[in-house]
Length: 479
Ligand SMILES: [Zn+2]
Ligand SMILES: [Zn+2]
Ligand SMILES: [Zn+2]
Image 1: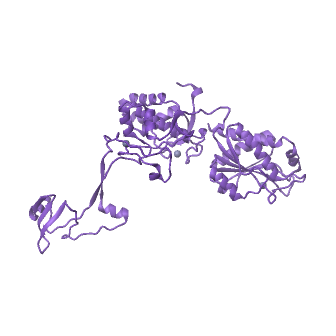
Image 2: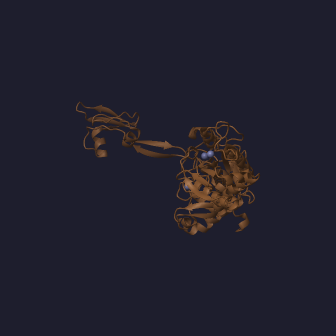
Image 3: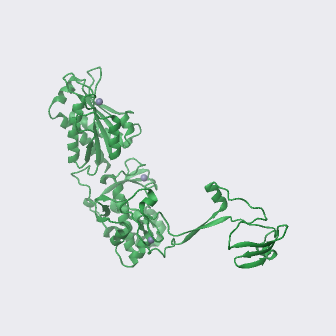
């Protein structure tokens, strides 16, 4: 099945190799599923988990508009646990030994039989939560995470009663409880006892504190007998509880799919899709769209910020009368068209000649949470000989720096501007916008030659095309 046409690649940060590795989604998914579910479960339960793994991966991968691994730059997924459970095929070989072949085939089959299928709601990829055993019913999302998610609704599940997690317990010592909760449950002296009704109870003590008769459950023992039996040092004794046994039912947060329940439903002959529809309320199951070669930045969301604006904030004014706020707006509008043609969704911080505070611009961007943010400006300098392009990013914003390098290289090639370098700056917007952000000083309005070029009618479009080229190259390089 190695048809390169069908290959959708993601970038995986491999901890062992300490490198980014291209992996095909279809090869990678079985390694995710192996780490997420008991391989001995029914095929339909494994298939349901496969759709869950694929849904989560598509939601995360940057070629589908996700934000990728938030720890490793340029990675869609990392193998160090941060992005979720994963186990390598190599590890599985040693873990499963002689069963490897059979188990691996089961995973591959589950992938083939659910190929491309993901869960969506209103055309948006869902966040497919799951847990080992719900213990009778799953949970409404707001009871676990404070927010209401349409498809994470409580459903009754009496399918997981034979799960090993259906009932379980944990003994916790009183000392541990005192420490964890920072409380004192009180110490006893040898002749006091804590009151644990119906379990242990002193019937009679003498004046000196010796136990004469003691009731354990519903049996009464002589103090001496009891003492001998337990090997206590003295009949002058008390007790205190030193541990509490917490009995539990179910395992996990209770959101979404109950795995043991899913397995039981599969045993009863239901299919993976029916299982998923049972646990995720109101979802659709459909094939994901493969990234389109003609739309290389499909699903990307980009905010463009035309610098300055309004009467009170014109920016630089050139010798021939060009005004920075007008050029930044026209380049931004051209750039919007270019990027939309390439599949991106583009939002401007202003569409007209109006004053917008920096604070408001940052707010717009931070509410949208785009893939990245670009401010467009024109430069100025006292020495009118100075010409060329500069791009700024915030210190440590690696993605911003990478995008900037692709853009500045393309601008130099396509419009012939002097590459004055990609630099670090702590401009308000670079600092305040929470996603990768760059600030382009396109050219110098104080340089007569550059101002003349900017007056040519299709020059804004050329600039926009060169910027769009840089962005596309950046993302293609990533794929
Ligand atoms: Zn990660
Ligand atoms: Zn359950
Ligand atoms: Zn400016």
